[in-house]
Image 1 (cartoon, rainbow, N blue to C red):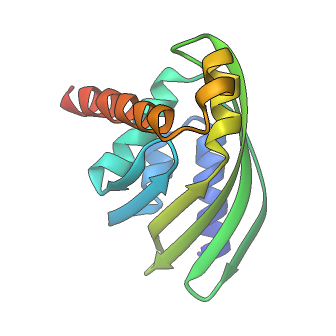
Image 2 (tube, one colour; image 1 turned 60 degrees about the horizontal axis):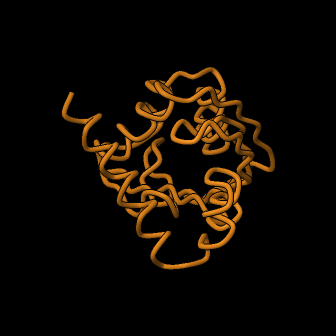
Image 3 (cartoon, one colour; image 1 turned 90 degrees about the vertical axis):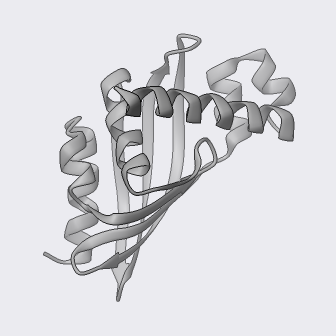
Length: 152
């Protein structure tokens, strides 16, 4: 399987709401990072996807998968209802990957947290989504949810 195939399998599994298919593309020592959760390692990164797919009505589209040597990238869009507010979110994400031995060892998602917070949180996100205070609050809540999910 090529690195392009692995990245495509990751997103195909995501679209099919198959968390185990997604985390099966990850190495045991995976490092994941995004603006909402910050850096996650190993089982925390894998459990994040399990938690998100269990609780979200997400629709995923992806394109522009590229791989060269041991690196890769993709663009993807997640459309879902943010459970805390019931607001609809369309999040445009740029992903980068490092792959070794047929597994993803590093996955970094980049998106505009202010645009995300305006959609997910409404007026508070519009007014404060740029601020370190709100960014830290979003991350703290995301990590608390992940910790509770992982304890189960």
